[in-house]
Amino acid sequence: MSAARVWIAANHGEIGGGEVMLMHIAEALRELGRDVTVVAPRHPPALADAARAKGLDVEVLDAHDRVTWMLALRRWDRRRGGILWCNGLVPAAATAGRPNRIVHLHQYVNGAKGVVARVAQMGALLTVVPSQHVAATVPGSVVLLNWTDDFAPAARSRRPDGPFVVGYLGRLGMNKGVHVLAAAIGELDRRMPGRVRLRLAGESRFVDPRASHVLEEALAGVEPLTDRVGWVAPQALFDAVDVLVVPSIVAESFGLVAAEAMSARVPVIVSDAGALPEVVGPAHGLIVPAGDRDALVVAVAALAQQSAEAGTVDQRLRWEKMFSPAAGRERVAALMETVARSTAGRER
Image: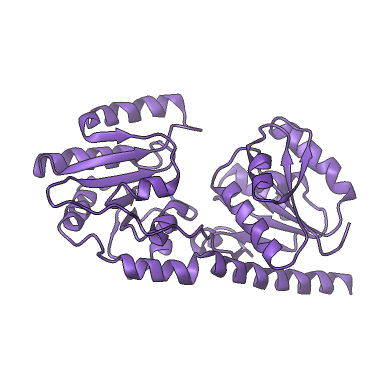
């Protein structure tokens, strides 16, 4: 195994935000001329299949749940050369203490996870997190901002006599503030009858059934105003909405969908939960307190009175500078230079 090779070990075989970034990182490394292989479990096969579809080299280990995946990674790592990029807490913990590893934590590691994270960091060359907000909670970490694909400018042209369409894309859960968004839509309809609709993209994946029931009750109150489209490609949603709302009430470690909308020049309203303001930037005025229905109502109503292009040029420029594939590739190159210096220092 070449010392230049980078192995990127997945957190699991499903595709979530962390796995999207795994493939972005693998593609950036490949474009930088590095040999790179994605290491994924056999079950579920979604990540391995998606990585192959992008032409990435994939090594599949026989595992079907978290325990068998961690054991398989620990065994596999005995024969690994090069650099292991642990894309999440699970592979980092599974290979704790092993040499030449990058630990990449995509989520906050509070409570018991914090203890596991400290063990997982043992012997690591570097610990990487996606935002300054997360870095403040992980001593010694460095920030590698996430980035997104380049989306085409949204195709929807608002009709003067048509409704203002508010979009949401992501997991349908209480932590994501979807119930706050539903309440805001109901209030907007009372103030502006027939002028606002909600386009809801996503499902209740990985959500506690009891919380899902509470959320469904909240959504039932605005069902006549809501178009539920399930999981769709981001571009499909962006082409159908006038604004994207990210109303999380629990701290977000980044906010990938907000950056995606910025690429597509769709106006974005975010809550102040975690790193979301960090993504849209301090000059962006459409940041509301998490859980504040009335503030969200005011923000949406104000935007509905503006031009469809309001603020989107600056958002797109910020995306190009910070969250584009070119920006991501530059950051990965700089990070790998840091890793090379660290590796050389340990070998001396």
